[in-house]
Length: 310
Image (cartoon, helix red, strand yellow):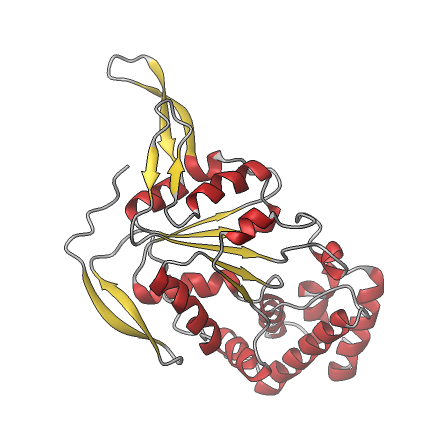
């Protein structure tokens, strides 16, 4: 289960762009699990400062917030900036422990016989080799998956595999664990937005995360900057209008006037479509058609006040 040869390793201090935060960057040959740097990615200083604490202390980190708020992308882009291999698994209500630790596969041995061989999963590989690991949608995990993680996330944590030998893997010193969730407990609006998540996350699981970071949406100016970088051909006034509508929608969600949210991801999809279609038609394709009938009508009226009718 050994990974690519990572020695010798040279570590240098590297500034995360736009934050003034310096973290250890590994200088070495390319690794297949290191994410690609997005040159247009905008880091948020406060979030980087908090995640930096987790990186420097080895603290397990959970990032909680609405879909499309930038939780996973921030971890990926930090890994890219610091040249760290990252494994990522997205959980759902049917994911069992094998998607993390591995499972038996039927293979042919040297004599041509079919035999069972345990093939370690992405979490096992990350723990042994000192990669970062990102567990997306942990609030949708089954209890057996959480129990597997709880033992690993202890201060002296280890991963016990379900192979025939019960192999025990101790945490590599460079291993870092991140999890994302839309909510740690489904209530009110979250019940409608994130129906696949658990009613309340296991307290024993929460206790094993030394840091829980609430990730909100970007400040309007930064969000406009991000959208503009992703869709540079779109007029800046159109970008500002998208951000204004998105933030008004989020506020109405908080006030229970709407039951839909408006992620940065949806803003970018809408902006891209606007380079080809009228803004209202583009909104229907990328945003409005995803909503229930009542929210569709309300948000369509808002968009038409900005852009007229298609």
